[in-house]
Amino acid sequence: MRKTMTIWIAMLLSAASIHAQGTTTADDVLATLRRANDYFMAKYADPTRATYVKKVRPSSLWTRAVYYEGLMALNDVDPQQRYLDYVDRWAEFHQWTPRDGVNTCDADNQCCAQTYLMRYMQVGGEEKLLPTRQNLDHQLLTPNLKLVPKNEWETAKANAVNLYGWWTWIDAIQMAMPVYAQMTTITGEKKYFEHAMKMYCWTRDTLAGGLFNEKEGLWWRDKDFVPPYKEPDGRQCYWSRGNGWVYAALVRVMESLTPIPSPKGEGGAKVQGTKVQGSNALRAFNGSSLLRKDFIKMSKALLQCQREDGLWNVSLVSSNYEGKELTGTSLFLYGLSWGIRNGLLPAKKYRAACDRAWQALQHDCVHADGFLGWVQGTGKEPKDGQPLSYTRVPDFEDFGTGCFLLGGSEYYKLLKQGVSK
Image (cartoon, rainbow, N blue to C red):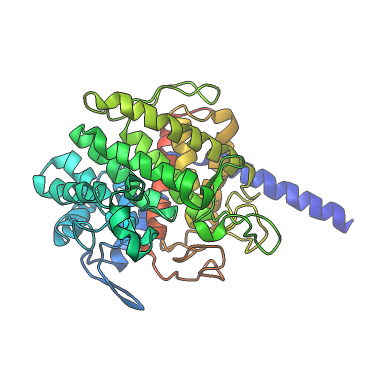
């Protein structure tokens, strides 16, 4: 009798969940996004104020830059001058310049430029463009001498391969690659995207034997996690947010470099977006075809490791640190929703995963006041920032909010577009 009652209760809960998913509206999603963002903007009312987590860091650091990516996505679906004022006050304070100046080659420092260039494309202003362009031009000519012993630097400077060895961790792909794509779109100069593709391929195929496992469609975070490294249960360590970073970068780059012809077998509609200028369109097609293939491989893999509750674990295929986590889930929702909307992923196969992800984020992670729970703090692997919980405040709140706004805003667009399940 007790077993029968348990099954009956489980069926009722399942039915309630399905009903909830069926009644989620775009307005519901937008209300939740506003609540989360209002919480953040109220708590961090001064966007110029430096952060202090163990040490002082300027508010142009990558964690805050990711928040602004999310805020710009929210503004795209919910235009409000207060959002743009908040962005501009922050960017003007930092003089529209990458963290640590125009000679930095650190992808984390370049992340803020994504928002600078978005604002440039919206309203113009050479001051918004010039520092980032100077920065990328510098990196195009600068080898990563950390890859070689100091006594071999002179030889390394002449070795073109070292020009591309900057993204030694997969997070860097999201932090910097979209900046190169945006600069290509703005200037029409193919050198930026070509260089970014070479850096991407170095990380993908060369670093530690290649950080992308094409067979499984997932990425190792850096050289420390490639085989023979294993999780305690003997499985591969595919860190959720690290894969989320790459997945989001693929979206942001492809969106910048459209038009992209439809892939065969996983959709049908052409991707619409900003047209690449002049002769660079052909190069954009050639490079983006690889990114598109990687995006589809990742989508298939991510679908297979989604939790029953709709979230993803911090370690995607391992039992190590199983549990709810918001940032990776939000980035996966971002990519899946974008892929469906733009015809790269069939809704019949992927839409349910988006619905389940949003329901879990909304009901399991978002507090009444807009605080976001189950956010893994900064780090590079599943053990970092543990234990997670609904109420724990991560070391940095900004990037978690940014990820959530990215995912939710794209899901909002999916609902508004009315793509059938």
